[in-house]
Image (tube, rainbow, N blue to C red; front, side, top):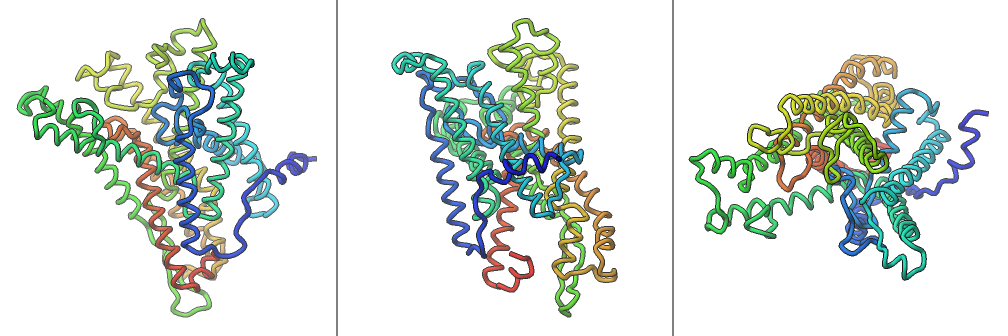
Length: 489
């Protein structure tokens, strides 16, 4: 008996959101999407019961929080982390052909979805347990433990139960958006979190003398409420561009927006014609960022998990050698885990301006490792993404064949269409994945408005662009029902 037969009784019984039986009207899709978004914002503001006075401790996700969504110290503590980590495991297992599942087979589709949910539950436990029971991520209230008679351990159990429920909730919220709404829940939650940071980074009036928003700061500079040095001096110029003025952060943010939107519009369009309907023509676009920027979540999540491992070892292993990792107040400052930690801001590498005391050679090595990790990792995960989501040459050729379309000048045969697609899709997938990885590192190095990570900004722009395209397609299908039949919607 194979693993599929042994696991089938469990995987087929995993709870799931029912698919709509027919076409879901566009307004209803928007309603479901908006409802889930409101619920997400509500849950990120529900604090965990049982935390000590003063709230949560250090945020495990830290700079990764913008791309893994959720909220520190809330019921959404884990965000989409377990979903992404489970996707990494499935991508690796599927890429190595160890699962033996055919996603075109309805039975294997059910098994794959059940396996994905089971892995998410496992990852919720593997991530949540160390987060609650190790380190200072979620310190429990001793007073509550005494009043309830369960001790600190009991309070930790209560906290874990809450974040477990939150992890399961976000799993099904993602599934509801994917089946009943517009886009995907994972993308929606990333947009929500990053947009909050961007709006705060532009308009926050919290403190004119500190790290306030871009526009309030410049109002203060113009009115004299915020003091900066003369732009004719190196110190004043640095303050305007790198300090309170945030000019470089604004330039980087706008540049990332422009580059991603331009890259999304660069495409090779393969002409198509309908085999039975004369005059019915179309085009199949192979975009430069063919796999989208979603594989970047997988790369950054892998880095986040490696840093989490380092923090756990630092907490549990008193004699951890210095070459493996050195930590100061919970932050890695040396050793192997420092070298493989991603560059998050200008403070991590601008030694010539006194932002860091690390040696230039060590900083150069860390930047090189981050670039290699993101460029090669982006390309590899982009390939896995394309193959496992039905975007590869073979799957695309079958979709075109089943829709009744063909490439003019070629025989109407899936193998022929597949060979044409192989000229473009694999190469574009690798180039696009590597390009997104490079952009993410550069954005982190230069800094962005609101302290948004480069990967988070890339994801937000790309997901928003695709969401716009999907909404336009939905509206087109609402106006022309025949289009819905052609796209099997």
